[in-house]
Amino acid sequence: MKALRIVGPGRADLVEVPEPSLGPGEVKVRIARVGLCGTDLSTFRGKNPLVSYPRIPGHEVSGVVEELGAGVTGPLTPGTPVFVVPYQACGKCPSCRRRRFNACRANQTLGVHRDGALSERFVLPADRLLTHPGLSLSEMALVEPLTIGVHAVDRGRITSDDTVAVFGSGVVGLGAIAAASRRGARVIVVDLDDRKLEVARRAGAAEVVNSKAADARAALADLTGGDGPDVVIEAVGTPDTYRLAIDAVAYTGRVVCVGYAAEDVSFTTKLFILKELDILGSRNATPPDLQAVAVMLAEGAFPRGALVSHVVPLEEAGRALERWNADPASVTKIQVEVGAVGRG
Image 1 (cartoon, rainbow, N blue to C red):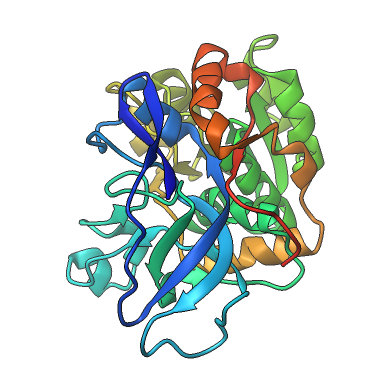
Image 2 (spheres, rainbow, N blue to C red):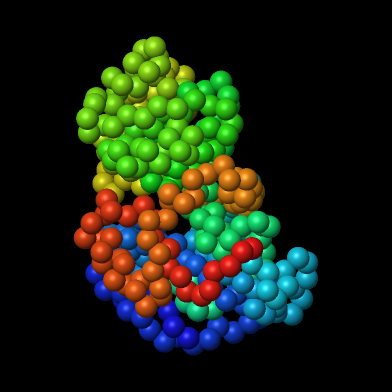
């Protein structure tokens, strides 16, 4: 069967790989759509320290159940449309013992630590597959990327009393914007791109700030009566945006860290103490997060049509990565159409 394999920095080839074997407790899925995200672009660029080559990407996945392994019971039957929980926890580390499996010390994410699902068929444990009525397979492939922002909102303990600043309106930021606004929070979004800021408004942002055209810290202070936002969700991952988050957030506020910074970030730590800040990491997502996003998408509460900027067949996926690498601003979300996409 065919698969896309990133064989090294700057090179992705369409290759033939063996059909996956089906074991007890597993399900064979015919893959429909796979989303490509910034992690995959970093892998293609040779800048993802978690990846070894060659690597088949693919963790934003939808498909149709094709075959059940021995012992699989419950709602999954052949023909059921599904989306994927792409994380695999060890079950033994401190995070797992606290039942925070998303932050497992030995986590294995599809397409990152192990080969992903950008192939014609894939086998997964049954408990890694979810379904939701009313979603197309294209929409199901959007669930996982949006959950990262949803989990960040949960980590930030956001309520209707909060003013929340979200730095970055990529897919992760959009998930955070939608989730925070659904909780009744006032959401302010900071980004460099007016096109992305317009999508942020459609996702639930009350106000937007183009940090290329205005001083972001001054704008946030002005929009909050000089106090700063109660919560900042950092979904960009640069030293400047991390420092801005600490500088701009209100006293006794919360900063939720989602974006991976590619270089070390230096801080003047007195603000940690003077403001008595809560600084919270946010990693991956949980199955309840995925179900919450599925509900949000099914209710039409998200501008899903504005999110996917490019749809390409499997044969064009490597060239799509090349084009994205050459012009990152032109892409919001690439989905690779591996098989026929219908209604779930």
